[in-house]
Length: 394
Image (cartoon, rainbow, N blue to C red; front, side, top):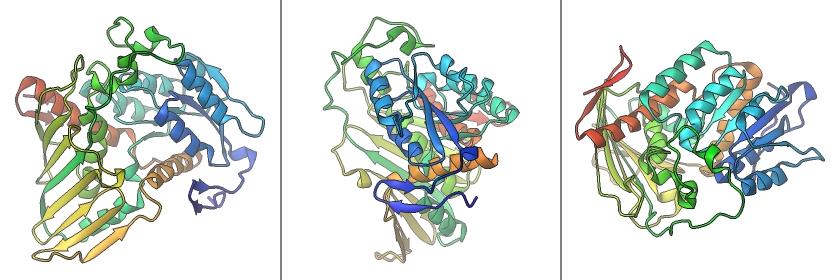
């Protein structure tokens, strides 16, 4: 793999030029804020060419194409993702659409033989997750789920601290994420043409509503809510640090919804039980105050000998009865560096055909916890995961 020369810089990872034989042609499906952010990280790799972009919202499509023009090469514009998947020049796809499209687009991309970088959460139901794991195992596609902590040097270093036994026995992990979404005014108009019927896709088709398009995470028809959006990251990080598998059981509680016409709560507590003999408690509150991004999230691993606190850019280890950390590490490049590393890992695996750091089975493992949490909220009871039947049970 001598084709890469890594240079850490303020703009990310810059690569030495790659020969044409190692060029990867990428298609982008979903070019909103996150899609264009990750697309630009892909584009920073010399061996990567943006070959096509698909979006059903014209302003997003036009902006992404203008950002992707490079060296006189202009990507093709598509307005239906299946047409992009049929493009034989496209080797890999970045899927960064709203959550309700993830399952079908990944399945169709596998059928088309494309390598796939799919943003999290991987899917919306346990049944979708089981089907995706099976399809991925039966395919030859390289599939990376966008849970970048799996590639992040800070989290990998913390995992080694846990594995060394420094913390003793960890029987509880406590995590929180704080922000505020209540001050955001509902969207009442769009800046350009949207193919509303196609955007709704597999969900119930409703009259056009700009707010459903702009703030889709607040509607259960399109997502698992903010608890799923951020919880997939948090629980995957816990699984990584604790070397944990699928949960045994999940329960949850939530506050009421405080915004009109939406149906996902801002404040949720999730408790997951694991066969590795620990509990994971995740508290998300998007009715709190705003924090600087580097301080809005924390995970605390409570061992009987020491505690590990890890956020976005730092971790510390505190010994029993000691207020000063005995181990401390800071990420000089910051949390955005995690996505750089995750994209680089995916591109390495596209070339080598090895398994990436966040394959489909791990993406489902993280998504399942949140799916069960939302199911527990609706049913008002603790739910169990049957690993043999791969079904949720009461």
